[in-house]
Image (cartoon, rainbow, N blue to C red; front, side, top):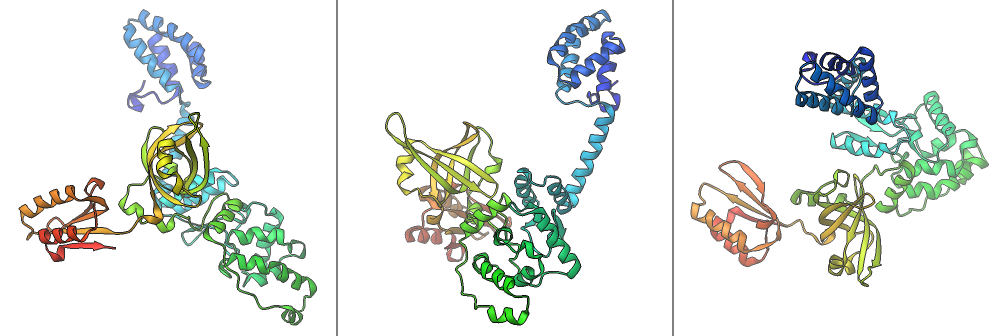
Length: 455
């Protein structure tokens, strides 16, 4: 019965055949079992188990064998289809896997369009970036209503922007199709229908960077918007417009935090970067887990940006804190119990980037229990590079191990083995300090040209 599926129950019809052949079920009773499985009716599945075992025993099968087979059937009931569905799902799954592997940009474009306005978009954008797919924010000349693929890059659609009217999106795209790309922000304002020349309608487009190709300073566009709209309202004459135009006063751009907050507000995620970008070098030396990959009971190290800090007092009148941290993959709650708070609490501030070590626990969702904190802005890119060559004798290499153990510090050590052509970062237990005495000792062991302290 299971020959075609390599001894595994795959189809509901196979359950019916097994019940009929092994337990003497009529096809009617076998179909009742099939329906119980299909509807996950645990009570009926259990009731039919006794009948199955009795029927199998009557036909000469061992009770232990009958129980084992029915256990297989119960396991199948967790997720089983009829044959036509199972084949269709398998074929569809294979096709999607093939497209995802060989054409990831096209795959994710289609996936995003199937999930318009869904919060799962954020999760899949993060996944797409892992596959080296470049996802861009809305572009006034390249975006369509939904997500679109242009030269290997996925652009957010105009309809993805919150607080923007759908008829306004249609008007923007219609004008672009009829008269060509917009040549600048002023050109855009002049060409859209008069009823849409309202700051409240246009501001979301600015906040998400739809006009960045014309003016990357989004705050500058927002500052000038009202005066530009007023100018267009007063006259349709290009000559009079030029007379009414005033010289733009330079405006300080949004801070990265302000810009990303607005992207999050209007797109549901940040797309032009993350506040942790300048600390990405830390991941070169420390194994860091993405927030989105955390699981219960996992011990991990996170690189996070602190968005919120809440300090409370325990029943013992001791201070502890709850923090909200984020990285490119999501947000996580961080808990500092009194011992850790006494150690780090006075130095904690909203807007800091931290490298935190600890363990994940289940508490109203995932909670990361912090055991150790390193402040990213105080960490240095300093690194020891030590080269082992055929000329380094065995005694020198043996002494090097002792030196590494005796001079523990916080500076990473990378060993280059010239003979093997390999380069590896040593475990933290072998990291070194940076004092001049140690440098002299390493040079004496390995040679001047084989020791570099890179800062």
